[in-house]
Length: 85
Length: 296
Image 1 (cartoon, helix red, strand yellow):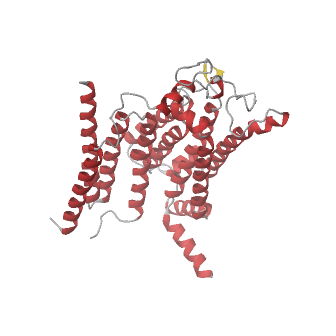
Image 2 (cartoon, helix red, strand yellow; image 1 turned 90 degrees about the vertical axis):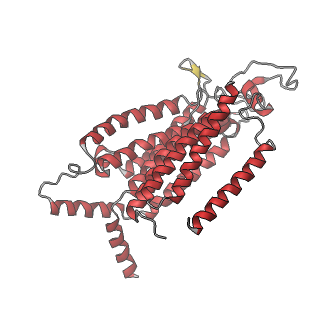
Image 3 (tube, rainbow over the protein chains, first blue to last red; image 1 turned 45 degrees about the vertical axis):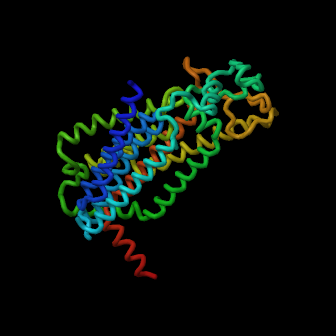
């Protein structure tokens, strides 16, 4: 039972991360895309936790959600917010 | 639906199907694992025990103290002891990457001076930090969070040889604190507090210097004999280095605790330097660089 719950959580979190990644790619407003990307990172943090790698969780949470988003926001601020086709 | 979206959707479906096929053939094995793999069990047996002899599984190992790392955390033990040189070079890659970014952002001091001059001209009261940043609520919460994040990063790094975590994880967490402060309180506030570029560079170099000295300590002490090797943590039967203190403060210590502290300084300060450089006002750079190009 616990094993099954573990797998269901894993699949659910992978799917949420996948949806966020899709949204991040398709979004024209790059600031929103960064927020989606941070959501993807947050879902993957839980995936890594379920796959029993707490060290990766600690590094990924800080870099994926915090540092990566901030660097991207700085880049958007210095360039353009909306993606042109 | 546009052509681009169609192609993207098709690619996603194909890659998902491929991944499903690969996984259904058992690429990852059972997830999560119900047993421990042989290599993992070796490290788990020996990294924290220097007196365990398991004749039935490892008949050749009669001296388990040759394989122990004075750590209960497998990842940190592998990173800084069993595969220590890899981490040493990884840290130096990070070091050189930041040297590169610092050299790209030259004329740092000139641009800041020009910015300050502009501030003085615009406003009669030259208060650099007031009136910048986000609202009062955000500023207050950021001040509280700043302290909390530093405490959390210290707990991740200083406990790294016992619980999940370590120098790099702690350093990456530490770097989020000045990042938040830059976003909410403006970079001039951060510099006024004392987190200046040169201070951070000094702290970062100090961290790397400590790592280098720790790595060379066995060799330096080996002049007296004993045939130790670089980054040796605990004494081995073939390399009789006296070893870093394995017990201290009531917990396992080894050299890993010191490596983690130094790595915390190096990574945290390194990321802070990059953020301070990235958030520089750009127009002054453009002016100065175009002047430089015009000269040639």
